[in-house]
Image 1 (spheres, rainbow, N blue to C red):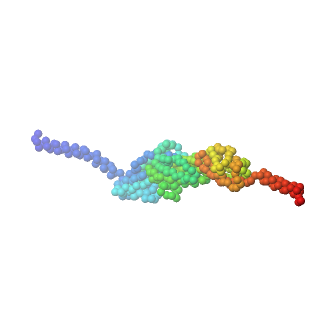
Image 2: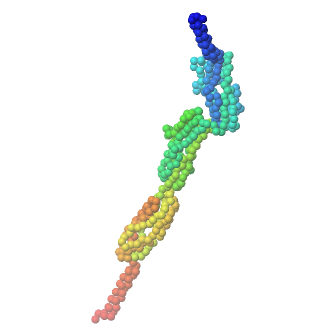
Length: 392
């Protein structure tokens, strides 16, 4: 065999090998060109929950420009569906090989649907061509795509005059954009508001599929709310039955406001030097937290003595009163006149109030009687002298 013949055989083998390699690709291309219509979606099998909506992105491929009618030819009883495109409800698309049209199929699953796999068939019909797309929806009570509402700091503490603000995160783990209505419920008489962080007056919020947004909850308790821990429930509800809720708590520590006065609210008394007189005092709790161990004390003139019964009031609940008797004894050598006594009530955990008591010391009636008797005795003595020694 000559060198020329050998070279010819090698060339022939190379051509045959190249034709064998290109043959499957040519057959595949020819097969694709022979399919004039294809209806498809990237995710034909999805998992969902009963009572929710499921959406499929539909693409229509055609070998040449032509209208394609779309219709659901098989669906479980009671299931509802809509085809949308360009913001409209549609029943057909116009196929274009250069720019294949897209549509959205929304399937609404009835709330009472049992668990299991359900098939739907979407049919595309064009002149001289028909194609069917089979879709499967699995209904499960543990379907992914839940909606959650969470807070990093779900508990706060303060007084009834404070306003509490909570920051919550609403997460939409479903594949579709959803509008949620926000609601918050607290104890009766409380002002509780839930709204989007960016909108101070909005009561609803739209969250795209797989997205999150912030929710602000403001809580304003009544000024006289008793010291206690109060739950606040916040709920986000979607139109397809999706719902997420969480609970935050407000702990009211309460205020301690002490009022201190006399039982008849008169701030003046009178008495005799050296003699004890009782003054009834009233300790009142006008706050929202209990007053503990209220101690009574005084600032009085030198030589005076003030004794309290009791000296310490153990507890005064909110809105209640306790009576204390103060025994005031002026100094024995106190001259007649007005004196000031300062009486103070102080709570162990805060709260203090003082009152000024004006105390008038008057002369004893005994000394007045003695003086009168002395005058009478002098008069009788003078009469006796005149009678006995008369004029001579």
